[in-house]
Length: 149
Image (cartoon, rainbow, N blue to C red; front, side, top):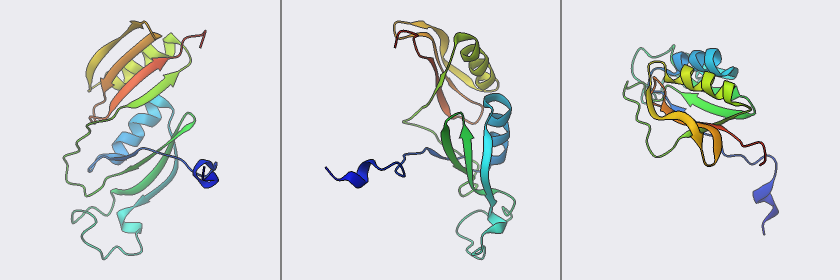
């Protein structure tokens, strides 16, 4: 086994491209999930800003890269090419919360302007679990870990 594969500096982090709505999404996650912006760079701050292929013209204020902490996790985000058509498919962000009251609060907040895919309810694997796509189209699974786990 290669020991470098399991070093603490190795991490897999979701990188979400909001296609022009990144700053709005970050503010939404700050308000509703307690997110904290660790780093944020706008396209106009890029030292190679003459590279017009990176984003749509006039997108200098858009987010080139952001690092956001939500609880103990890091989410990377960008406006990408600012085309206005984000497409999120084939994944969900799973957010584990400590208790049912918090699950209900988070689920309700993420549901505002979004689409409930599975209502928050008790399941065989959790006292509270639900699935929702937020108003940006990002799919979330809200989960309370059973106390006996």
